[in-house]
Image (cartoon, rainbow, N blue to C red; front, side):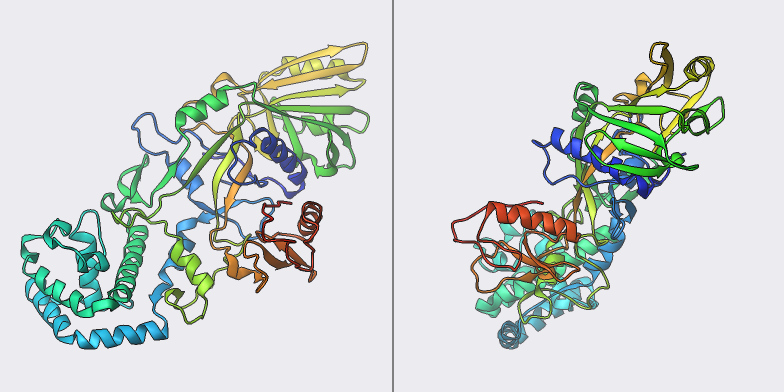
Length: 544
């Protein structure tokens, strides 16, 4: 059972300090900047994604990597399965032609009425009537079926119309479908140059239907995946792109580490003041920061160590820092497998209510697609082994503390509300040593050997930071500079009304101010009033 708890918001400075160090260490391999990550009920990252007993995908890992982010949460946290909001979005997308294109296609279809009727009549006589859907007429369903299931790889109407050898192209045509081919070809030829419009409408609508079915009814035949908790239930596929051997090798490289050094003083009955070396100072509830459980008593750190008369330093070492990347399985137009197809959604966002041929929302879903919204997921995490901890206490009672620790059989520790040792509070080894000259006692706690680059499905890595994706946060969510000739840069108004030039929406006024400073320093022709670059030859991406 997962016993890891939610990280308190007061720990944000510690979370940020770990993320910053991980960002520096992994800078050469990061695809996106790391973001602060807060652990929720799903716990830290279950990196051993293949069950060694049956070689199926670890259901715990799947739940973790397939979860969307909580809207407007800082640090980012996991919420509910991403497929829930994705299904809502993709089900709302349709493909439409502009008024001019639709008029042209209508005219072509009118001229091809006889050929269309012949195709519908023949199909019905062989396979029975085709029932229209909310987005597809029977003729569209027939044409999409032929193009995607009678050919391997799947093809489209435009290619079929121009094929010199139709039997070779439609190489999976069933015997019962052979009489259909010449009638089908006659209809496509009758459409003439409007075939590109018919192709766009029929094929894209068909692809949308396939994607929706794949995500709602995952099966082996459409790319669904089994997990180690069931041999019959298929799930929309996700994949970890980092080989398991690379993850284990990375965690085994214990010299690849980051250190967190803190001084701690008692500030009130329930809180301590923590000062991070080279960083911020802040107050945090004692239980949210660190606890020591000595022979069943969980308050030893609060009652005996973190007292107002003692001076405490806490050093933590996170070894084996490594990056793990993953994501949803992308829809393959040629095979019809898998489900993650973001283009229709992002195109629909951009197109809005404009009179263009393309993907549109019908109706528009009640979804916040902006950066920070719920249409989001993680694409990677920076992880490490669970930390080693060294607590040094300057105290008149140093000898008593040393004796207590030495005599303790079961010593548990939690950090940021997370029990170390994967939920078992007795797995960390502990030693104590003292110095009479300085009146100090040093308590050292280390994770067990099987928690360092562990190799079973329950193994977890401490999350130091995360790579995020907000696939719907596209250009139409911003004000775009028009007529300036600099389409790579956008204008963003923060909650104070100040406008910034940016390649992505920034979450706060502070982030925006930092961005503007960097932007002005690098490109003197740029201003927070949205003025353009000095020349078209200037390039580069500025991150805050």
